[in-house]
Image (cartoon, rainbow, N blue to C red; front, side, top):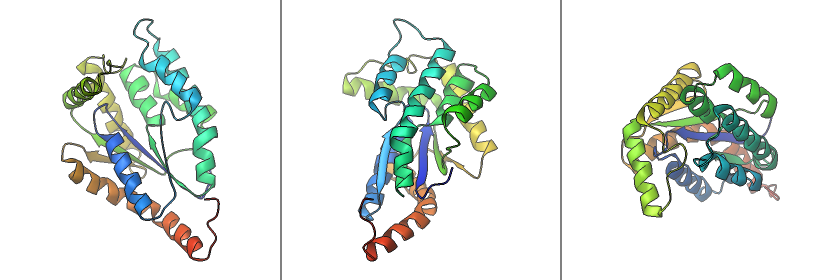
Length: 231
């Protein structure tokens, strides 16, 4: 799908630090005067937030794996139409917390749904949209579980449907992310998430910088000529 912006996604196990790294990179890009949109899945739209509540807090009435997957793609379809595509067509840099790779890792490798079935839904609902760059923050599953639980306790939140899963589930999800990185080295960067926030961010920024350079040059050039109104 042709557009003038850049679509960058952040992926990884719960507790890997992707949301923190996304926010840091967004701040850094904005400090450079670049047009940035941050969003997340599921939940980047009003519809998505309702679906997020159903998917993440359905422990009282468990969802089947296929229902969970269908709801994720329903939220994603609305997200693409309402948020992501308009921003990309306006030449903006979209940083998204999770996208289709999460479905492959969590519903595919984690729940056991065939990856080909997920790709079929991607072809149907995503209109050919794929990230220009995907950052996967890789951590040990046990570390991720501990971080997620500490975060929930600090925020006085209950564990989500995914966080209630056992260690073996997250090992399968991690395997899924590793396989995605192996299959698509041109798009995906697997970054060790064990270091400090600053250490990890340096690696993240290096990868993002290479992707946004052309967008940044075009935007700043347009700004110098007074042509950035509406961006």
